Amino acid sequence: MRALPPLALAALLAACGTLPQPFRGNPGQTAQRLASEPPIVPRLVVPAPAMALLPDNGGKALAALLARDLQLHEVPAYAEAGHKGDWVLAISATDTGRTVVPVYTVRTPQGRDAATLKGAPVPVAAWAAASPATLQSAASEAASQLSALLAGINNDLQRANPNSLLNRSARVAVLPVTGAPGDGDAALTRLMRANLSMRGEAVRDAPEGADFVVQGEVRVVPIAGGQDRVEIQWIVTQPSRAATPGGAERGRVVQLNNVPAGSLNGVWGDVAQAVTEEASGGVRDLVLRQSGRTAEKAR
Picture (tube, helix red, strand yellow):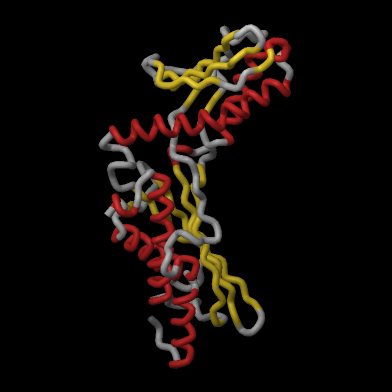
């Protein structure tokens, strides 16, 4: 670390101790925002039903509404006929005389029935009319239960797969940090990679083949009292679930602190070590939860 007068050094090292404070002694649990998403589930297609006691336009509308509501539960569902390798959610219905009971069957890519869910009964006339309100209610009610059902199916599949994230370290790409003054970009990048590696993840430099991608962004803003406000965000995305070229965001670890103005314009040294040591705990906690692993199992 660069030479500093004793008081300045003490102030800067104090900043080292407080900059990552959201994770101090409890990494990953009290970040400003640490997303807790449902487990990853298989890609699911929802074809328009032919045996659901609905008119053609009603069947298409129900499939579209159900796919949309499943997406709100982080299930990659699509209202289409699908392709080889897709899981299928087949919609049918049973007429009990006074009511119609929608039935949702989850089928594997091989055509085997994996699970069946019965929806809430709907009066026969209301179901046949296929009003937007009736279909929306049925889709919303089913989506919540189906998302949990699919997560359970996927969890069983992952446990049985030795190459799944449940049974191995995640491949984590740490991209170059941006926005830091001095040597902060290089120091934070190098030390985040080192700290995540020491915590047990398979760290790499490039995103190709990675399960998760970590991007650090630094913003330093001058404030009153001869201080700089430093905000560091570690954004975790998942390329395999990308809705955009940048990947689907799984969460972020945010660190905030005020430091003496200009104190980070040169060598970051121990500051970078303190920041990444604490932030890497939050990042790994997020990766573990997204992988379905626990800290105890990952050790």
